[in-house]
Length: 50
Image 1 (cartoon, helix red, strand yellow):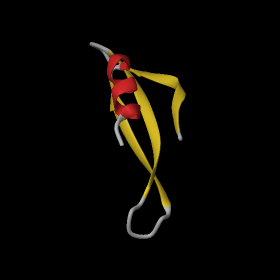
Image 2: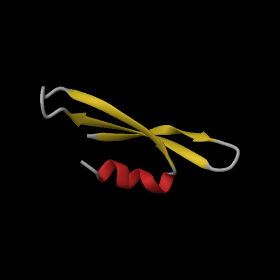
Image 3: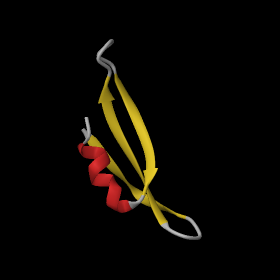
Image 4: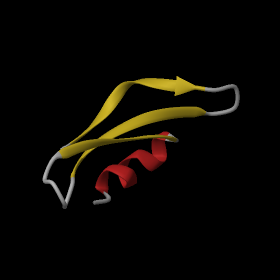
């Protein structure tokens, strides 16, 4: 499961988005959250990766 955040981050030069993805740990089976700040064009690729 993955979810994009609604708010976007802006800097002086370019617009950025923060993506949060829930990933299951192979060792314990517990879920962890991976956060990344990137351009809006890269978000779909980040969420598609396993």
